[in-house]
Amino acid sequence: MKAYTHQKNIMVGENSMDIVKIYSNMMKKHHKKSNLISNMIKLGLYYEYLNKKFFYNKNNVPALNDLNKISIQYILKALKNPNETAWVNLFSPSEILHAFELHPLFIESFSSFLAGFKIQDLYIEAANSCGMADSLCSYHKAFIGAVEADLLKKPIYALTSSSICDANIGTFAYLSKKLSIPYFVMDIPHKKNEKAVCYVVNQLNEMIHQLENITRNRFNHDRLKAILSIENQTIEYRKKVLKLMTEKDLSITMTHEMYMMNAAHVFMGTEEILKFYTSLYHDLTKARPRHKKRILWVHTLPFPFEPFKKYFNHNDDVEIIGMELNYPKLKVLDETRPLDALADKMIDNVYNGPYIKKINHVIEMAQTLKVDGIVHFCHWGCRQNAGGTALLKKACQEVELPFLSLDGDGIDMRNNQQGQMITRMDAFLEMVDRW
Image (cartoon, rainbow, N blue to C red):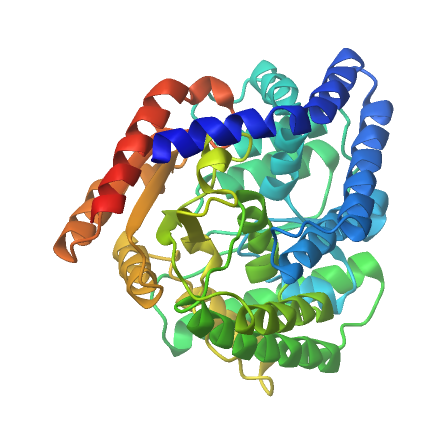
């Protein structure tokens, strides 16, 4: 059954990819003209925004169509206004940037958009030509290559943290030195105690002072409190959404799940994301009762890998209920002590510290969402992820959850064995169907 669904959907999707292929070929032909490619990217994003605004996809939950528009708007603001933009990683304290009215540009997200335009290989090669290691994360290499090719304009700031990804600090240091960008690294202790919280708060104060000098704007503590208030309201709706997701079909696509990273992390505390989760909750109250098999995806989704989309996008038998990166701890923040609250949030992050924290989180989410199986994607270049595979597999066996581990690359197709992955996914879904 799964193999038939897979083949049928591939045929349906071929024509819809023609316009992307044509546009991609045009960009590749003129790739040395960086200003032209930059404008083509912005034009393509704007076209996609208008497409989502005026041509509603009836297969999607309405709120998810809004998420498309929100995510595209965010990246367009960053690309059009580099003097008001800060480059960030996933777990940067973006709330501080929102308080300064700066636009965060999540570097892996930008690389995913390059993959969406099918031009990521150009910039991965540009990074390789500069001597970047083969083992470096391809998301980072694509972003570095885009900078080397002068595709991205110099931002006002760069901000990263030591959580989850050991490539972040090196990548941000390299880019900051190359472009003479002021940047800050948040060093997050693994164990939470009073001393650790104070240590992170001191770093936040240092970063705020740095941003005051750069922007020539006084930091507004009341503005940050208001942002945390919005974030807390969002968290309450996220809890309601999570509860409904145990009972209802979400019908989310792989692209939507990638966009969820912005909603769950980088743009938390904004009015747009509060509105999105509010709408998602109301949409789910009207959704049909759950009837599909559910897969929890661990780590990043392979963005340009079309066969996976044909398995899970609008399939009436099985769906990816979520990517575990998009389910952080839903802990209310203390609005009266905003810097302490942000410090507490960063230290408590399940991706900060020993891998067992992530394992426990994955199992908890799998049980909460009542999933039927777990797929762990071992993205090439992500050492902590690959190193923990055997431990996660053992934990899944202990709770009798079907588990599949796939080795591959999120955006560099040369590191993917497509035929092997399809065969293994077919076998896994057949096992889940019988479970």
